[in-house]
Length: 428
Ligand SMILES: [Zn+2]
Image (cartoon, rainbow, N blue to C red):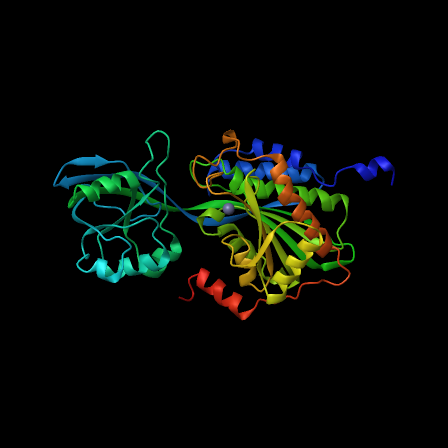
């Protein structure tokens, strides 16, 4: 090795950041933009010299063609709403319903809610949806954003009635409105509404991009890297999560140049934002090989200039201590916790594969995800900040991938299994 070669950087945050900027556009599940991003990632991986394939999977999709809400009593006003994707539809002429504000939809809030339209606080989670469906309202209205939002400066969220919800508790008609408008309706005592929703469901296709580098010494032991490359509506999905996608692209480049002792798989997952659909599809399609997977390394959110480094481990108790000690030994400032991180590592842990999640969270007010403010134009991210997470991932990965004896026991603790079951709504 010449001196010049020794000075060559192993990975480049500048190159990664440029790739992130070139893919900074909305990439929603099952859209042409998502497909295009998949093809672009595949091209990039292949141009680096990797073997790479796109694996297509079916995903439940939907489109809302029309959604309206008009307050009829005690005043008349039409509000801007979005229909939930996969919402039920009203009859063509719409539905006139009594309206009740049921706050967090606790049992006592829901007495007498049957047959009414109910307005609930914030996000409709699984347990809330279950309580709501038991009370049999005719329609469910949620709100999002803040009471300070101004139209034109913000987008009204498009939410989805997930299959896991409707499959367990049945369908309903679901609408979302602005927090500001919800405030006005409750202040003025809106008591009767007319709703109209025209919604269509269909199966679409989403894609995982999969690259592999065979191990030189232990080819039958696989360490797989993951990052989702899809985004939500209105977002460029740069912070969440092209940042993680480009970090694992750098890991691919690193292991192409420095052949790994264990087999390395690098997967970019589609449709994560719709309920981890890509990683669920991948683990289902590759069930037979999962016994060879010794670890999953997931990167989901990185890049904010003002932020903090976190690692969430999902495995047996010693995994957390091992990662924490290794980071301290290397002088890397990362908070390490055992925690079910809501990302593509979950289906792996669910299949017995321990996982380590790397993330850099923006400090409060210094970066946003899941709306139009996840945009590099707002200048809250940088290559330098991306490099912090990239170097953490690299330092950790090259040690474990090339360890003479694999240092992590392939075990998920009972408490972690329990937490994963709760996360996947199998337990309360
Ligand atoms: Zn994400």
